[in-house]
Image 1 (cartoon, rainbow, N blue to C red):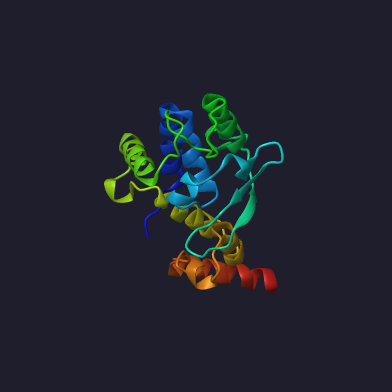
Image 2 (cartoon, helix red, strand yellow):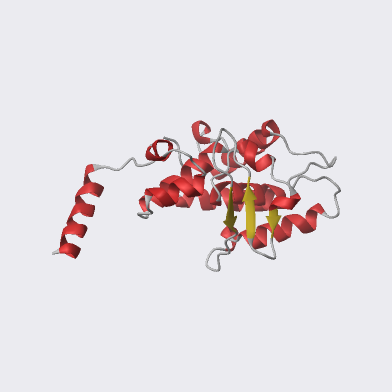
Length: 190
């Protein structure tokens, strides 16, 4: 499964931030909320409430819609959703479009435009072409959560999956990880 390492993600976000406020916000929200490209492009102004610190995710492909908290990040400003969104909303100005992410012509950013922009950013960040697609951000958050021992149900909720089977594809754990987990559990239990 394709995903970005934490260092690759930080490099990509740095490139995105330099490219534009919109590119940074789209990349960061896609990663932190596990958005599919169409879900990111389909976000509306009404879906984001910066004051309340929440975003409403209207999932596609039969997934569960949910409301998720926006997350700041003091240690890595490039990971701060509040900062990214405020920067984008300031640059966006009083655009009358109902969509959060708009083009210069006040049109919704479509998947193809987002894909091309993402490919260019990946190239500048040194990410190989095989992983230069926005969906890799969804795989990345799930993989990072697995690597940090998040519960599979937490990952399921984050991605909006209806079925646990959809989430289980991210549990690509090797023998060493399984051995370390068993050792930890046995030591904590006995």
